[in-house]
Length: 225
Image (cartoon, rainbow, N blue to C red; front, side):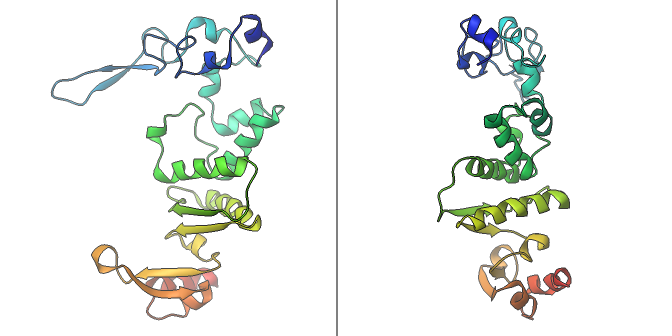
């Protein structure tokens, strides 16, 4: 807790937009107000009291390195790493988020705006940031969705760290850059939807690439060269 916050008698809940006291009560910490439209979707407008900052004036007066809580929540993970580099408890978590390719998301970003892949990687980051128990199974459904190739490489590095610690990672994935690094592949098909559901091939990437029945193997060959 910052010295200024302690002097004012503030507790940690003061800086949560989910708790009454420090948040803007006009919008209940949402930063926006909902205008109900009878025959159209509801419209969200910026709160005219806090102007989208979510907190009341007194809370925003408390600053860390010239940044108040609204400024911090508006920062990306990558930007926040620089701000909190001296506070290892925070910086360690931010570092893991960046390692899984989430350096661009904002700290105060609504969970409803995240893609499925982003949400999975946040959960993965949570696991990586705490003391890891061995013999844990992680199941991820297409975690590379929307990722640039460089971010995919970062994600693979993190997944390999999990395996090196004695855990098992099971991926449902179509990205060939990921598939070629697998220890073992189960190729389902032959088609998608009702035309699939059967095991076409299983084995190492090299074995899948040599299987003439596997559509995956056909494309995987080029990635193994």
